[in-house]
Image (cartoon, rainbow, N blue to C red; front, side, top):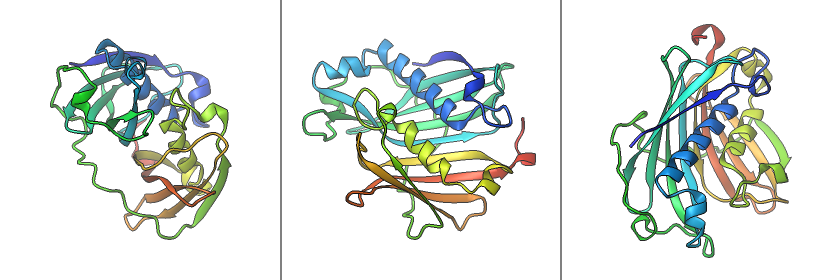
Length: 249
């Protein structure tokens, strides 16, 4: 029901202070999820045989503290719930001493590669055990719409942004949003939580607009990733930041 994997934080995955970047941790989560899915017989390669694939619909990562470069992170993951169209997979992150340093929850759907529409899980996935324990008790309510932006950044979709499904990998959206955080915030604070709601695919050749504004809640920002060609909303995000002195190292 659960799967564990240990990752060593490489120095090229760290920020200016020597701590693992959030994107590195999100990549670890994705890697662990993929390995566990393979053991359960539901990896992307397994699903593609019947013309299907996995797509992430929601993500919520909350960190108590970040590991330093050269240290290890143990990821524990498991499928927690499975309903008609969506299945939830949760994660716990532990440091070298076994202390819990982060939690995450994700929601996934199975996509028909021809129609690009979600399908009923029971029609595609085999039965496997679930662990109803939740790392983060998130019901995945719709994230707020960003109505006006204070910071904007326009970026092209590069080949290196794509995954096996030939659309932008989910971790790239997080990177786009984090690039729009003001320097004075990024240099004095650390990301405590990030939530993402994926709404549409971004493909190679697209240009995206990352928009950001401060939320009403102190230390929080709302983000929107849009397609520059037609204005489609590709993702909504919410991030929460805490001063460096308030987060444990």
